[in-house]
Image (tube, rainbow, N blue to C red):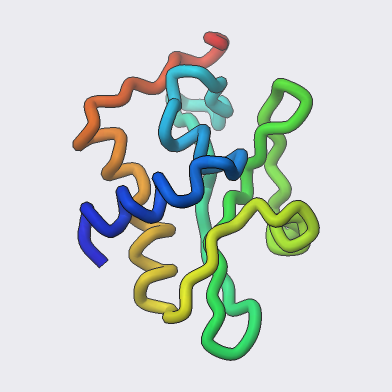
Length: 116
């Protein structure tokens, strides 16, 4: 997967809650992790069946706030359908580790802690 493919995947899935937050980070809050660290998604991927890998956020935006689902994130993603499917592990891994490249290439700016 390259950047253009990543961007196309984002555009094809812009109806998903976590993808909207990637495409428009300035419109959503960030989670304060302390010591100057913040989080927005904490994206990960898992195998969800034969030749099916899903990418999903551990941090979800619900009721106008961020919630870290931690170890329950996979189950939450499946129930809410807030994930992107890939047919191979390499693409799922690439997307989960490189989605923030969109912010750099598209010059998106994250809000500060306490904004939004």
